[in-house]
Image (cartoon, rainbow, N blue to C red; front, top):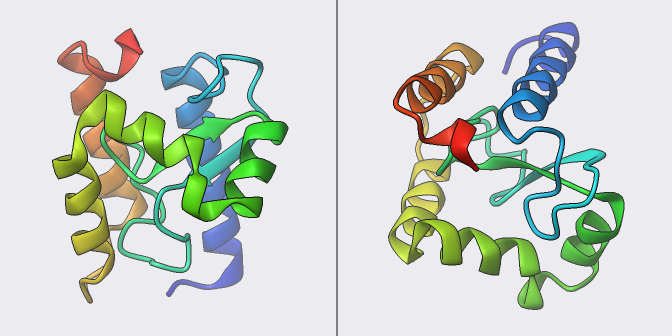
Amino acid sequence: MANRDDVRYNDHLTKVVLFGAERGRCYVCGRTATDVAHIVSRTAVVTRWDTSAEGNCHLLCRECHENDHAFPKASKYKAEFVRKNGQGAMDVIVARARQKAPLGFAEGMGRALSDAAAGGRMMC
């Protein structure tokens, strides 16, 4: 993994991208978002900065994010992801997270930009 400054910078850019793409709204409840959440833990470097619509990163409000961590088996975030994108998209993220070659920030950003250009992400 890159040095700490690079990781912090990429984390910050991910949040900026998501606030634009998701219009600052919680992925689950629609309230004002505060946190970047991950379907698969951010320790999985392969998917850490994947900001595509069917990617690993989304915005959550503090309450939804805390609930996601407190009750992982009853995650409303993951249930909402499957409802919006299908179980197949969830399976893809989980499989990609197990890969060795990391998805760099540039690739994750490229996916988000191509989604937005295709009208996908920005329509959420």
